[in-house]
Amino acid sequence: MINPNTARAMTESIGRCARAVAGPSTAIVAVSPSMGPESIESHYDEALAVPGVLAEVAAGERAGTDGYVIACFGDPGLDAARELAAGPVVGIAQAAMHAATLVGRGFSVVTTLSRTAGRAWDLAHRYGFAAACRGVHACDIPVLELDRPDGDAREVVTRLCAEALDADGSDAVVLGCAGMAPFCAEISARLGVPVVDGVTAATKLVESLICLGLRTSARGEYAPPPPKRYSGLLGDFTIP
Ligand SMILES: O=C(O)C[C@H]1NC(=O)NC1=O
Image 1: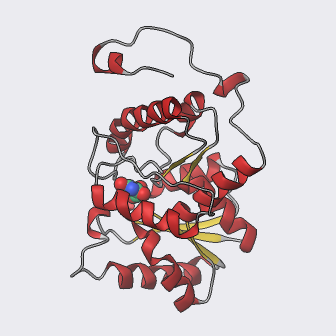
Image 2: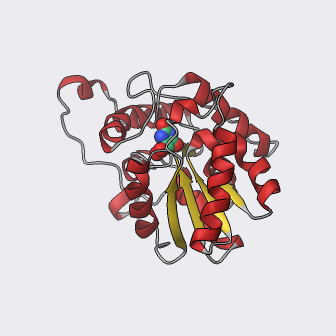
């Protein structure tokens, strides 16, 4: 489980949520890069998070990791990570959108800042869910304030999920932030519709792919990157 931001509390939360659904033979290791943004709320943050994600995948390959989840709703570095990894790499946005389309005709995405809504739409189109994604809604709560004990994030997100279902005519909700994972079961119970959290959906997808013997294809676009020199800080990366 790679949390692309450097917020330790969020990494621990992601690990807990993944372990809650992982099978008995699955060892969940939750990590986050030593470098990069403390939260990812813009294209700039996302770009600066990718080197750290790739460093974690490279370390995982050296350690023999079977598969990876990129636990940030922008799926930062997903394609590049697949070029490094032998096993499957699943982003939480892609996993959540897939899961939502298996239990509903149309889903609404509820995410954090309004400025990241475009990225969610981009991913829905990239993953082939342009028709199934009926709307993207932002609660405008900063990522690192979702777990504030004195905050009302859980209520705000729940209310926005209800409003999104009505506004979009959708029948499922995708939570658009790894930090919302702990809210998932309660919101689903309160609204009576499938609410999908990408952290747990991606965990089970990676498990399933490994169980099916499916690894990232090394043919074509996801083949290992061609060897070359990387200067400056990036030169410290050792591609496995
Ligand atoms: O894209 C977002 O708004 C949410 C995204 N940012 C982050 O630091 N973890 C996430 O899941």
